[in-house]
Image (cartoon, helix red, strand yellow):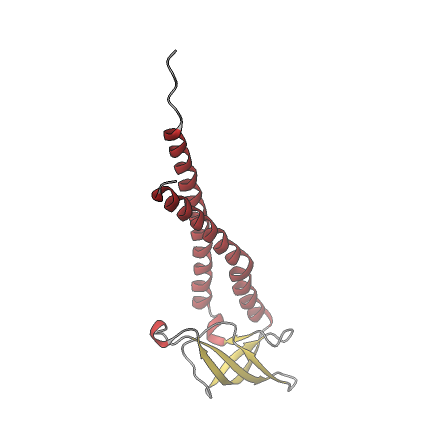
Length: 166
């Protein structure tokens, strides 16, 4: 098999695989997580004051100019229980030892987010990105499949022996 044929075949198969992976990630994690957390906190969330106990950057500083981090907070529930939990969404606006307003789910106190993270615009941006990821996964899969099938069709047409004239 010539090098260009292997490159096209492997590239199209990689695109199909990545498209399917992104689709599965979108359908089974991104969309359910974002809509589930936001709807739970909006419908039955309880507001509380919390102290940020730690923030861990999502990546190295040179790859993370916004300073986004996974942060943990400690807060007291309405019945006085102290909870230490990671915020549902990354943030770049707080640091360790800050006092912040959070919303937590009283049924699952580990589900907690900054009050500002479940606002209309943040939710709209997250949901838009989820839909874009889903659409990109479908396009990647279809494009990879189209390239793979087209290249197979073209190479088979060129490798068939010419009909003999008898």
